[in-house]
Image 1: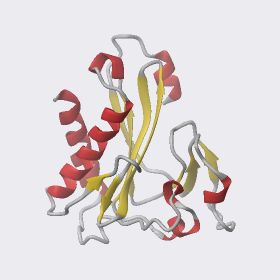
Image 2 (image 1 turned 30 degrees about the vertical axis):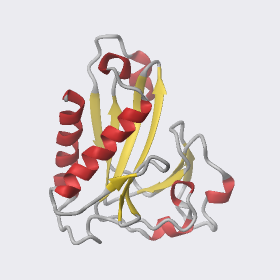
Image 3 (image 1 turned 90 degrees about the vertical axis):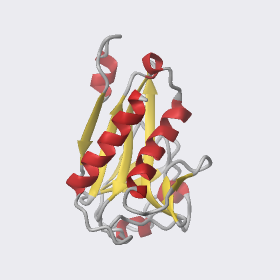
Image 4 (image 1 turned 180 degrees about the vertical axis):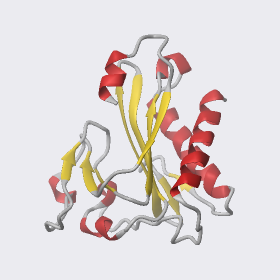
Length: 184
């Protein structure tokens, strides 16, 4: 992501990279030691250059890296964050789940529980990193940390909300919504 962003020319097209990760905690540039795992549970902790605190990534999540030229699209960071949150809430709404973003704590929430985390990095007017949406991950690793720097924050998943669709479904749906909103 970093190399792609650094090498971008003004006419380089925007890209969305869809992936998943082996179990890992990532700590953003605002990371504080008090939010890190309270005990060694065998999951590595990796420093990241994205915004935000600590989160967990693992199987059962859809991770979408958003490599977008903000200047060309006339966007700044906060509107991009809101756009990503809206793409997630659109997808959940299509399944009858009411969700919302939070201007004070970026991400998407269902009844106060976080279902999607966001963390971006802007370099040269272009974004990288992105969002992680919980389809059906093991949620126990979140119990060892203060997710996104919020002690006691509950984390949920599409599966916990009764949605039995796989990661492929969510990857396609989220990508389509993000692309649509970026074109909007």
